[in-house]
Image (cartoon, rainbow, N blue to C red; front, side, top):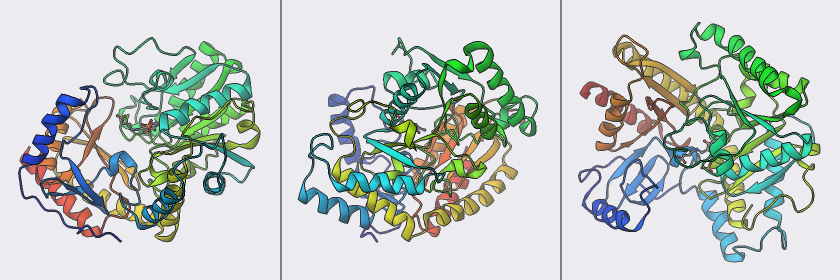
Length: 443
Ligand code: PLZ
């Protein structure tokens, strides 16, 4: 599948001398506002491995933030994107269209939940897809208000900053933000005062009450929610929450938007995480995993809603770029051929079993959660539920130093998240978990 050996190899300090040299150049030339989790400079990546300029090979538990689900150099992605690159790089779909764009939209209609008539529009980034979902929902409903949730993340552009819950680092000092955005509670089981078993019913009742009393359901164009909240801490809304919100939206003519940018395309062991509770979103936003690493995003949904925006009202120079579309068709082909939903479920089984043992041993592991290859542990101070961002950072650092790339997330910065490529070998997966266990023993 890839020429890159699927073996961890640590031959220098991490980051090594060549990475450090590049980091110095980067610091001089790249704006300080753009961060990096781990400044090892990449030369090659594929399967479950990232190789750096110093010859180290890291086990990848990040997939470039849930993007390279098929690996970072999947054969079908490389083949199809290369062929497209040689044929033409760009024509602009709004100038002269091409088949690849249409084919991606056909695939999206087939793969997303529900058997109603669907249409799509393609964009470049996740944030752009979410912005366009709002435009479409407003055009369809002729309403303005948008409801989002505690711990939600939807992007870094002006409108999506407003939709995003967390101030630092996403919003601080970057206002003013777009108006008509309202935030309501989400059923965060682990932290719900009366316990996870009550969270679904209570949180949805609170959210619905707030919408009704504070905004007025008749003013709401859209509710936007991640079926598994990503940056906010891999929070799976407690059972019953999503169906209650979806039903409320339906009863009140509100467009229900599932932001599946992080959770979509086999990541949770389903094509889309909405499927777990039988949710059929009116609109669904996708990006990340859709195109095997090339920039592509989409809004897909009920044809009558998607068609509400006037001709010429949606678009962008690069939206649905032909190389990105070819890559997406290669990624989707790979997901089907290798049955990556099954692989994601197997990754969950391996990870959850081993992480349960870690939780048993260390009381700073407050919660183990997530689905498929979207798994996290929430770290707390011994004997409490107080967030422990310090130990989270220390664990991440310890993993990095031995060649395991892990990411953190969460409103309180206390969640260690695991997003391996779905094509990672089981030996690498287990080796990564061994390294994590050693990191626990060390902190
Ligand atoms: N919606 C659910 O997860 C992107 C962002 C990391 P873009 N998440 C990773 C960072 O620090 O910028 C994301 C997401 C959900 C929207 C987005 C935004 O997608 O492609 O980054 O714009």
